Structures are given as C-alpha cells and as structure tokens.
Amino acid sequence: MTHRCLLLLALTALPACSTSQKEGLVGTALDDPERRKESFEATLRVLDKHPEYTDELFAQARSHPQTLDRFLANATTAMSDAELARLVGDHLVQHPDSLHRVLIATLDAAQGRPESRQAIARAIEDRATVAAGIITDRPSTVDAVLEATVKAVLEKPEARTAFIGAMYRLSPALAGMLASNPKTLRAMAVEILRAGFKNAKGDLDKLVQEVTQ
Image (cartoon, rainbow, N blue to C red; front, side):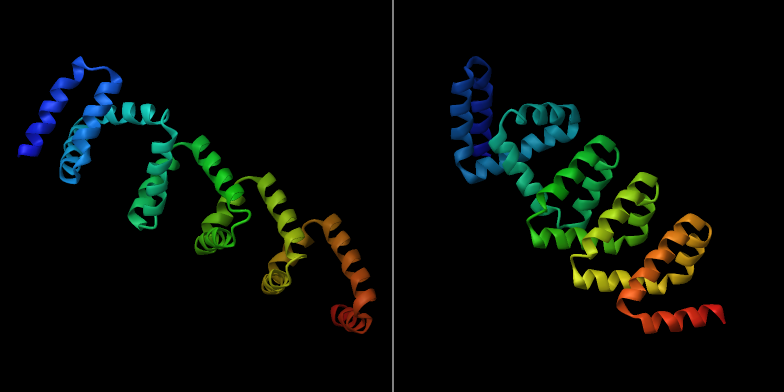
C-alpha cells in the first residue's frame, strides 16, 4: 500500500513537471520491482477500460524504436503459444494489406535461415489443402508458383524425387487435364519422346507398345 501511495504522489506531481522531469519521477517510481509491477498492473487495468488509450500508446511507441523493437521481440517469441498465435492471425486476416506485407517480409527474412525456411515449409505442409486452395484462388499465382517449383526441384534431388512421386500418384488426373488441352498434350508428348530417346530408348519402345495395344 505504501508503494502505491508513493506512486500516486509521484503521478499527481507530473502535470506540473516538464517531460524530462516527468521521466525522472517515473524512472524513480519504477526502479523498485514491486512498485514497477504494481504500476504496470494499474496502467493495464486503466487501458482495459479505455481501449482508445492503447491506440494512443501504440501510436506514441512507434516514435520509440528501441522500446517498440523490444516489445515486438517479446511478442513474437511468445507466439509459440498456439492461442496467442491464433489471436495474432485473427487480427492479421482482418487487414489484407498488412497481412501481405508481413508475409512478404517474413519470406524475405527467412531466405538465409534454414530453420525458419523449414518452419514455413512445415506450416504449408500442415495446411496443404488450405494453402493449395489459396494459391488456386489466383491463376497468376498458380502459374508463378508452378514455374518456380519446377525450377527449384531441378536443383534439389530429394525434392525432385518427391515431385516425381507426386506426379506418378496423380498421373490419371494430370493426364485428364492434359487431354483437355491438345496443344499442351502435344508439347509434353514431344518433350517426353525426346527425353526418352536420349535416356532410355528401350523403355520408350516398351511404352509405345503398351499404349498402342
């Protein structure tokens, strides 16, 4: 109680002080861990009752890069908690422009970080159906992602093996799509025949016999 009273006295003196003097008073009041905890709790209770104050606090915090960076660092670390991550996700999807910028910044920042790249890959794998649904919402994205994927798997043997395996499993569906587009079917057939003559003519002859029977 004594700590609270001292803090209250310090706060009542603030209006008559300059910003630098207020900084000194607040700094003194927050030096003690117990008083600091009480002060933060009292502030948070007021902010709970007045959400608009939180908006003002955030706006002002943006002019204090060191504090803002520390706060965001703590927040991102805490997002390993599923409930907090969900809360942040729920807010992000309400602001598409912000979501786009965060996703771009995250992908860019992950370029040279193997563990972060794996985390992104795991997230896509965990929500493969959702991710595929989102990608196919935008035809230009399908084009860009497929082209980039083919180029990437050519450089990664394990990924190439997985890619070929998926094509094998999905060969009936892929054949059906190609059959509906003769131009693409012909182009694929020509390239396959060329590759077959170069790499495995005997296997290609067997394939021709199988198809024509």
